[in-house]
Image 1 (cartoon, rainbow, N blue to C red):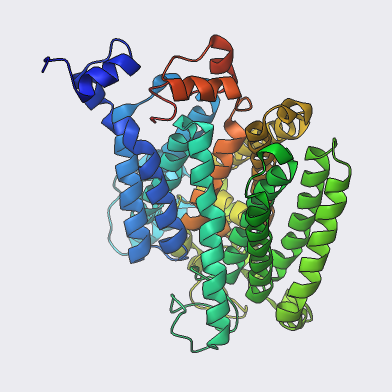
Image 2: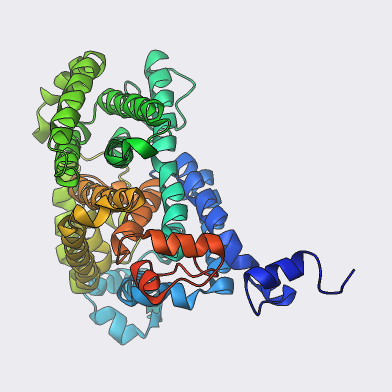
Length: 507
């Protein structure tokens, strides 16, 4: 046998100029896709808690750290080249908590908003002035920074994947949301004492799935409905000549959509159900926008959704109406928001430190209010962000919102004709538009809750943002080049960033 025969020679024939040593060096890139899938699945199954230090969160963070190590080892600079702005914004988000941990001299620390009173209290008990970080809870800031790693590494990993692999990764969201909905059915059937409830601190009369909070579970179900609808509409747009097995796939998709909607109603989440109405409307618009060449498509989707909604209401309508009759102003969250506003003004433009909310809020609580003894979050991500990160954190959030608006407009302005010639490109377009609406759902709910503080929805947001970040539709020429093992043409490379043999399907 020739020394160059066997697998190594085969690889050299497929990838001219490659060697076995170079192939061995590519192992981090080849593991990126399965590692990203593991992180996303772990986050959705284990990252639904709302308190720091939970064992499930620790597992997800460890997996996110391993994915980050893989990315550093592979570092596909060519695939990440088009995403300089997104990576710069991500780097700024990761840098903010670390900067808050830098020790400051006593004179500077005391001059910061809200610190003079603390310095006086320390002096009163005999604590001498000393160097201290901006964060008033350094341990909490470290934990918050670590909690950012799974979402950050998953976002970067998703940017390196070609469209097919990103679709497979994204499919985990509706699949695991469906599993959560089925678990939610069993939780409701088992009653308040059901052993299937995974967290000690949770609402006992509703469906929570793999989450501790029903409102956060409702967010995942809304996003999953959007993504499921994108696949359904893409199947509907498929030419009949290519539609082998389409009827069975569409039936499975509609059953999944119905189960997700029933699960949403069983959460009894007022905000979740309200956003669910927005989700159903967005699905109809998605069908209308994508099927302009097929005018009946939007009407059929709207009629089917109406039938599903009417059938679903019998499972959760009574419980939802009962919650809607409650006086929303008696909810403790409004007192928590008001107290958070006062605390944010006290700590001024630099904040109290990311992750310090639990440490800081009790200083401003009044015994006369309806606030519970322990409050883990502000029930308003933007207020909590202002309290902990000050003006820099708000500027980062505004930058992200501006980016989301720009990329969403780009996704919705894509003409259907761009996708008509390629069914796969139609799915890519639909998933981007669904991702745009999914991010909107999370941003809207963040104004009355803290969904983005859970690792599960942080990972979901990362995948949605990866879809929005992609610059062009997938093309048949780029995929054919992948299958043949030949470098794609310059046009194909421009159409699908990161789709070269090394950084595309092998990423």
